[in-house]
Length: 486
Length: 127
Image 1 (cartoon, rainbow over the protein chains, first blue to last red):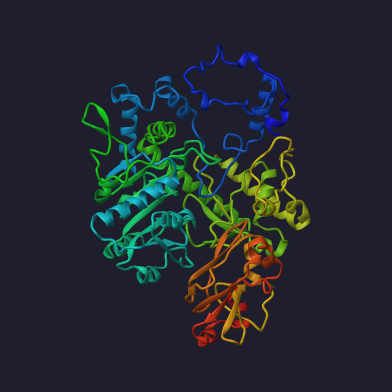
Image 2 (spheres, one colour; image 1 turned 180 degrees about the horizontal axis):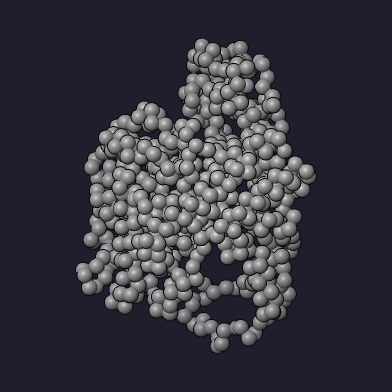
């Protein structure tokens, strides 16, 4: 039920109303509303109950195991929240002068330095507001680099089919053609296909390493050499940075530009579309093109780098300076972990994934790449179960919800049929991992005994199985007064 | 096992091709392809008059699971597209060999010999 459906004319929560009258004098007549806005009219208690109920329906990392592959749903430490919400940080106006913002700016400067160090890049800009914008900034810089050299015949960005689905879209947004490179049966990029695709038209390659197949790209140094020899640059999609944090650096692998998803790897709250933060790091040659503003330091004071100091910058990506609240949380997280802690993130996220993979294989489930060691995530295919029991990956996913666990990523990557992409993250205890494995075994047994029970899941949630086909075919996103929502 | 009619030619990327015998072909996606994709919710058609080369992306079929490119099986010019699919993409799920996507005028009829027959496609679709 929507809050609007609770609404009754004249119902109020007077105790919560702002004191005093609004001053209308300085708003010109032509800009004033003629009719009252249609806001819901409810009592204070109704509002409290409504939003408390909604929060109880929330399926989140604070309440449940959330092994959603490729999304890194790790626990978000409360300390990051409380420190980012210190009054001095919370109350700072984005247009406050540098002299009044030295504390905030020192935190941002240090975060730039930390991210440089942990990725092995030469410089970092915190400006992008999300992973997708970080990708956009990354490819825009590659384009700016080629253009600045008068090298304008490079029209293609290579994208392995094990890369993130957003990569080809980013290349196209930046005016390039995306060219797909196939993956071999062992999960690595097909080197022969790569060699055949490289040429004077190659602007660069977008790689995710570890790839979305949950395996590390073993020939990355050779790939970097080949792409550079062809005059192209290498873009690192930071979606899977959690697996290698503090252990392997994209800069050392030969990448020229990288975006990081702080909302994944650096543990800021995410889900439901944001907010995120997608800082970009670059090698020496792309440094002049970084998006602004960035924070610079003369050793004692901090100031914003703007257009004058960075004339070749690809420009601004938002009105202010990135998602400040998200960046602050990531900064606190990085400071709490330190260098050693970051290595432990990689160690335990990969250990947890490999433990689960091994246990699921022992239980008779099929790994997509059984001969490969998992990174921070891995893939099982439920092809056999779908064929023998008539219960597919979607049915398993929905039934897991009844077991009190969020489903893994399903049907992605597209290369593996009936797949589950499982990412436990480093913050889960062995008991949660074991509980998931037990749930998978229980669902399989149930499917053999009573398949309809699995196919009809979920049974215990506020909403049952949704008709996603109808939802996609008859898209209806707006509620109108008088309609009933449920 | 999915339905693979003997009178059609196929590609490894799961298009079926019907030789109309007049220098043109009709193209759609196979029963196996629609099964893998699940319920379709959107079809993007090529433009009539477009010159396609074999293996080029020319249409998109989107299901609740994934969006997938459709590739031109041969070189040729698009002479017709199935507009009905814009309103009823589910026709491909219901009748994959009836719900054609586009028709091509062949540039080189000999290219048809390079396509898979039903038996070869059945084998390719197994993997």
